[in-house]
Length: 310
Image (cartoon, rainbow, N blue to C red; front, top):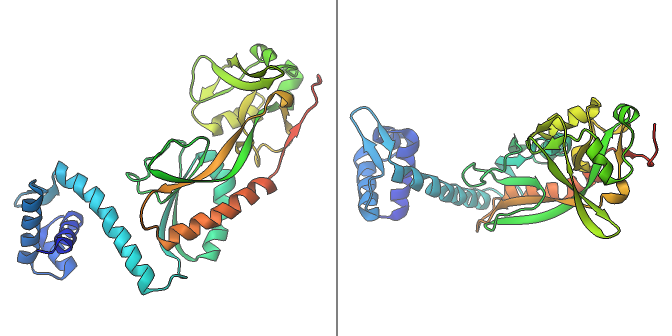
């Protein structure tokens, strides 16, 4: 029996939850669907479905096989649709994963422009600071800030955003301005990453890179939480500039220790390494390749202070 016929029958039964429903979906007779599944299970040497009088469910082997083969069928459908319709038509779903704060500040504002350009797209924007598994979570494109450790992914660097050490004027009026990184041990440093005790912030001096162990009364795995605390005058934060512009730009928030902060974080577009990339994903990637660097350069700035006391 044709393997593609078997695979189509398997996907239909898995999604419909039964042989009769799969037959109606595919337009085949129920015996033909059952025969295709039996042939597939015999060829693979495993049971793909648990069968009962009331329902049909995937076995563990069947679930793993479904997750792999579903992607293959979708890619084949994408290729068919692109050839059948037009290479210029961009339509269908695109799932985009991006860190929460960076996404809110720099990606979400670009979505209306993307949808105006390609009105037949259906964007699913996932804002999360958790690095998601692109295959398991069905992510078409990820926008990430920082190093990428995914050998099976395609990575395109599109921009860089510098690191900054930042606080509010109200905090510095009360506590003074740190003149050197060593002064941070006397300050309330707000720690991103959820570390409860201390963190090492990186700096560069005349003798090269070094780090300072800092502490504070607030830590969180959410950039939004630390940003809000900085704005409220709770303490000093250490971020990428791209995570600060917008809501924290303006005269009430300033950077300090600028002469000691030299690092930057790359902004990367990442997508699964597949042989076929749908037109909708290619066009979306091309859009963000141009739009994100412009967005970062056009965004507001964080004021810089001289090393003075208030």
